[in-house]
Length: 138
Image 1 (tube, helix red, strand yellow):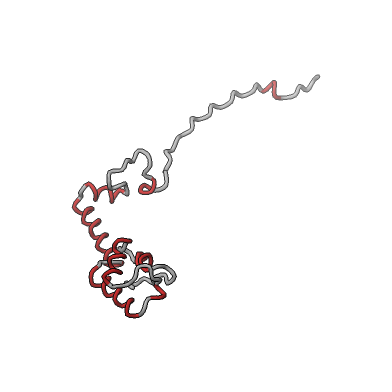
Image 2 (tube, one colour):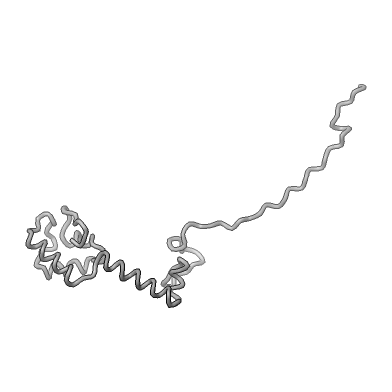
């Protein structure tokens, strides 16, 4: 259905949520419109029930590739017009007002530490040559 194989062992209302763009409330409404019991396992669906569910999803919902394309076009439009949200998307920062001083690792990525230069180590004072060499005449 919509390019996704539904898990056959799961209940209908859960299995339909495996399609991108369909959550639990939408899955329940789709099954209600198709007159399919939401508690019935997918493997127990008849061919007619499967066809009804597929037809409702294709007719009424934007799912999978079309939905992903629409979302990416919306984000691209925001970036092109230079809106605040578009700039945040472009920089890879949180878009919806979250703080960034701490706790934005998911959006910002792995930490990049600041390079700290070590102070140059002063050369140790050289030992006098007389002390270092053994005495020859003793």
